[in-house]
Image (tube, rainbow, N blue to C red; front, side, top):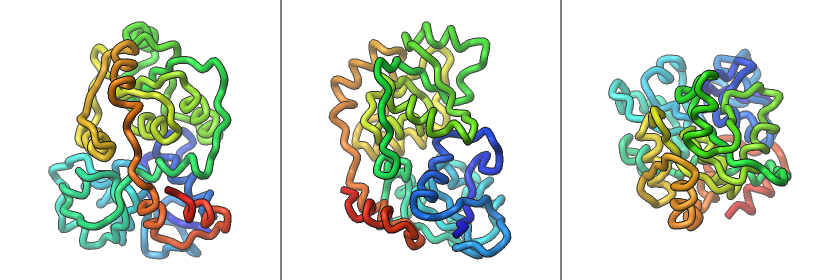
Length: 274
């Protein structure tokens, strides 16, 4: 059964690794993801699913004139976004407490759906994995990668712009890392989900892309936003704070998925999610 949704670059071969998690989860649930608008038959005619990604802004709501169903998307503080735009929405979950508070949405589940991925894709970790620098795509160019590695003390660079066919391979490389230094939000979320040590890293001229989405994530984890410049400081933050952070119960998020779970094995997994 096909289910239509939207996320950034969802109809292209090179995708953003974090956003592509939407497709991986829907596959696990028994659906084939198709980009809105899609010809029927689909499981959600007249609706468009917003799941993994920062989609709650004016631009995305203009791209989707029909009814929007939100399961875990986040808000980044778009000043053009009006609360009246939510009138045509069914919201079952949002990314974190800042999104819920800023949009005056009460009593819905919280959490990024990417946190559920390890329950469906148990990846075998690689041995002797490196320290990875995983920047937001705005924070690097081919010319400055070596400079970034030297500044952060990372061993290798990993891009979150990934060919579809390589997404699981890149995900395995990410979660196998000895340590992840990142300013890509979903690299941090996926590392946390798979219990891979990580830290928000801003080195040199790195900019924090859409700070409110990072505040949302850190508040969800119950800790102040904190950035480090390199591995040395990242290890200190991890030792003092990061390793003690716990993901809140994912059961409300899992059961808030707005459509029937078609896969029997996925239903069993969701029932067992803590």
